[in-house]
Amino acid sequence: MIESPRTPLSVLRQVFGYDRFRGEQATIIDTVLAGRDALVIMPTGGGKSLCYQVPSLLREGVGVIVTPLIALMQDQVTALTDLGVRAAFLNSSQSGEESAAVIRRLRAADLDLLYVAPERLLMSSTLRLLGEVPVSLFAIDEAHCVSQWGHDFRPEYRKLTALAEQFPGVPRIALTATADGRTQDDIVSNLGLTQPRRFVAGFDRPNIQYRIHGGAQGREKLARFLADEHPRDAGIVYCLSRARTEQVAAWLGQQGRTAIAYHAGMGSAERAACQDRFLREDGLIVVATIAFGMGIDKPDVRFVAHLNLPKSIEAYYQETGRAGRDGEPATAWMNYDLSDVVKLRQWIEGSGAPEEQKRIERQKLEALLGLCESTACRRQALLEYFGEALPEPCGNCDNCLQPPETYDGTEVAQKALSCVYRTGQRFGVSHLVDVLRGADNEKVRQYRHEELSTYGIGRDLEVRQWRSVFRQLVTLGHLVSDQEAYGALRLTEKARAVLRGETTLRMRREIEPRSVRPARRPGATNLDRADQPLFDALREKRKQLAAAQGVPPYTVFHDRSLYEMAGRRPENLDGFAEISGVGASKLKKYGSEFLAVIAAHPRAGIDRPSETEAETP
Ligand code: ADP
Ligand code: ZN
Image (cartoon, rainbow, N blue to C red):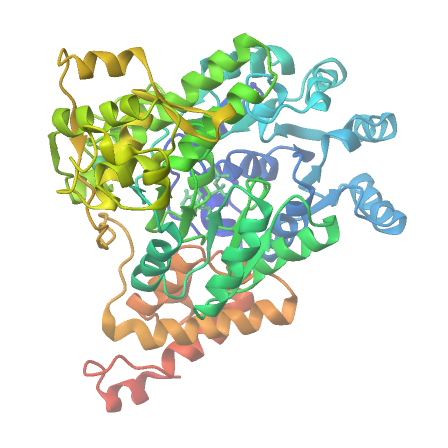
């Protein structure tokens, strides 16, 4: 057979088993192949890896991938090896023997890709070694780590300018999912990129459905959401405190789910074990503080839930962005309560940070609260925050799917605010609601609040509704909570204007969150009911094959490949090669096994047995 010259497209098809490049992948690859530097900002799941993997396979020498995420290296290398790519990593988790073996392969030009942590790369021995072999490119992943403006500054990233000096002819490609304009500039200057071409893909993650609820009983709402929409799926639940992660994990366990807690108080071995289970088990829920996430490269996380407010929109977007990396529908679900708002405000004020820093954090929190209380499309608001316009409402967020009711809340706000005023601005929400609803209890009598003009003027609203009113007033900045006085609410200047009747106030009516069916995107794989049994059987096969090799199931095949197999039912290897994600190596390795499963599950009511028999080789 004559070997035709390899092109990016032929590599994409033969090695990775995909039909075509996505978005700007092809142009990025051409840029690097031409020896130029590039800066790539692409959302999670956008397909950044191929941007350096394909050129590494086409250019002479080894492609060096710099990444801080040591825990992921093994899985990445396993997945590449499965594709027939010669890949390895160098990091501190290896024994001396293992790294010696990698170095031998490197010297023998037996590697296409080498993953390495920045500290390791910058060791003089490593730099010397790389000086002795041809290097095709340097890819700097998680490049925002080089910027103090980014959210995860890592000082050693700054020293990567050494690459520009020592390897002047080698193209460098910096990649990240999150970088605003300032961070992008920082990446270019701090890495010393040479006239890089910039590729900034949109931030939108259309397959993620955003849902934000206010009010108490978050845990119960979460349970309902999971039962209705993700009964068997893997996901992450974020909480603020360590203790709470453990409580919630135990509680989900009682609800029949497999859930484990993860937080910074655990030892590193325990944490690694936790991450490992998350990657390898089907349908595991991790209940975590924000310590969990960075570097969890699991494509089939079907939901990310927040039981508390995240710190900022950036944090929210990053955390929810861990859902649906494979492009299939996923949900970002949040419930938050008044106490969250109070707590976050107190953290900022009590942090001891310089005033300038506090001012930035206050602004970030206010932007987040604006998103939470908004009655308009969440995705439009999110993208706008990142400086991107979405012309039409998205149709795939709670506010689009179930438009919230608003009402003129001026009068209830006046009642609530004057109750705060009459009780001396010394009480928290529970007592204020008691007074408004005319409760007869000891505290009311102790302070003789039954004598106030606001006593009992709010019997028409339920406790839950009043709490929602107070939450919105705090969120909107009419009330502040006094940390020295156990969360007592005080009026702000803004409140006085409402009390004087100078402004009106629109409020959001709390509705029972209803389960909304994930939107069906064009192009998304939707499984036909008749194909479900085959899909389950394919999943089982995948699990067996993965377990036998000690790798996560998705390294064998992604869900999408299984969906396609179940829907298209190829009958031979040629047909199997057409399935997305099936390249030459996987065709050979897994083709016949999966074909056997497909043959054993004729589609009910369609396949005529005689024909099926006749055609099966
Ligand atoms: P990122 O690093 O940007 O988060 P990945 O490189 O992990 O994204 O890619 C996300 C998913 O999309 C992976 O499952 C990958 O195999 C798949 N993918 C990337 N490019 C393509 C393509 N051109 N065609 C089909 N699937 C692709
Ligand atoms: Zn929307």
